Image 1 (cartoon, helix red, strand yellow):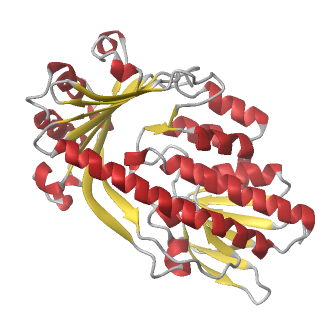
Image 2 (cartoon, one colour):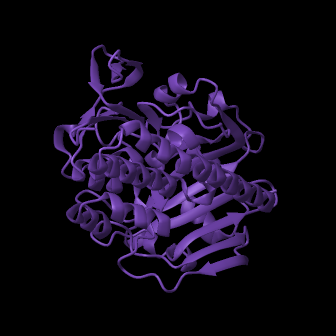
Length: 383
């Protein structure tokens, strides 16, 4: 195999960009196609937890200067995960006091994406939606775009998320299921007024608050080590409940303006401890949006070929375990390692893909099961 094989990546999310960085550094010709018109046009959440696996994957994938940028613009490390009743009575706490400054405990999603784009230049092409692909007579892959046209490479990696067009064609039987929870995201800019509102523990990591009526809420700060231009420190807020508990249909929920979504969170917590209520009350109205929490159903291994999948495109998982981004980064590190090793040894590219899938599939679906168990515990605490 030529060490100049061309790799096509559908999706410029965290996993796709980490893979692009690693493959570019490893000598591959890489191009990433992203449906977003610009790097700053997606509502997926705000704060991402990074665990030791995610940190190790970043060190594997990123050139030193890119890793330094990602680390310098990450959040000031936290050392606590805790749970509380709606009266702010602590029921669980786990501390992590030995974290060094070289490790990253959390990042702002948008800031991480900007860091991962560093140095990739025109290798990332925005406003290019991959709708499908064809395997050519020579065994290469031709991708097709929503607005017409095509491009061709030696391998296509579907990193295009839960609604992956690549997965739909490669594995039409693969499905994701609604786990029965909705999450309303929001954030509160930290300034002189709001800083004093944040309980001390909420500033140390991720804190979960739940009542006996079926509502749960998660809170965590992002205080940048080095604040990017235009960014502000903030507190992420989340409200989690079943559709029945929220009292609105999905059709209504996903059509509501941000102000109405914020008001749902305010009303849901009206009888909670005042320190929690005021966080939703002071949150930035325009930052609220809802998501459906989904999980992929386990699929059997398939015959490896010139198309594979990465991250949410194959193993969508609930955010309850805080491991979705970490698993996507692990996928990127594993696939890049196999592809670079194949280029160095002259092994066929498809052998590298097969080796990656043997690791990625069980790891991803085992992680989904762990996240679902965490979701069940969180819902039980709220119900």
